[in-house]
Image (cartoon, rainbow, N blue to C red; front, side, top):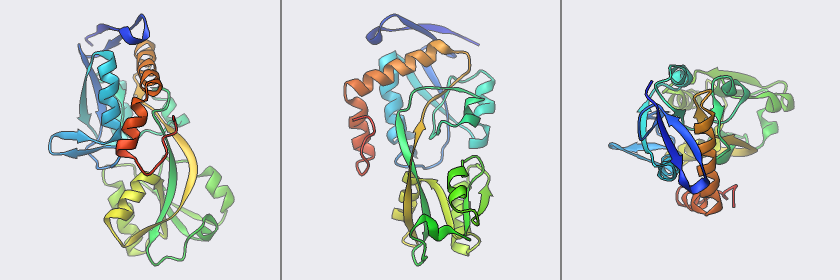
Length: 249
């Protein structure tokens, strides 16, 4: 593994190493998760890539993204050929076993998506219903509120959202639970869907760093703190997620 010692001048004498000189090697996906991340030709757009570019500018690095299946993110990180996982990663205990995480660059709610003509409008309406979601999401609090609800797990692969939306249209499930921004985007793109309600979970999203690289973790945190303090993160949030209040203002 190649290493390069860099200096973060804006935040003091922090030194860190990256896998490739002058580059932050990012594990991500080609999936369209706008407004978080999406590809327009060869250009990567969205809130997360914008923050990544701003962070890398502070660190004197070039962000370079490589696309993988979501289920392979942390196995790839463990090989040591990439520096970080940076693609809509809610910080969970399960993921902490695979990576060290930075401070949050965003906090996001979950939501429940239904068909437009569905009678579901509240969490209690899910009682006895079939709720689809990814296998690695936590349903503990919701399932305690609704003990008779059937949870239908979907694999966290590249086609997971398409599969869940198809299952909802076909009547195999009654609702979908997932990231609120992603479900709001699905609602905007297809009038057959409606966001029934949101759950104010405020899940922290962070950058997963190769375990043991504490110097890089500290440098990323310092850069994020600087972006928050100078208002840059708030401006990027307003640009890409104008309909949600920035949690760091």
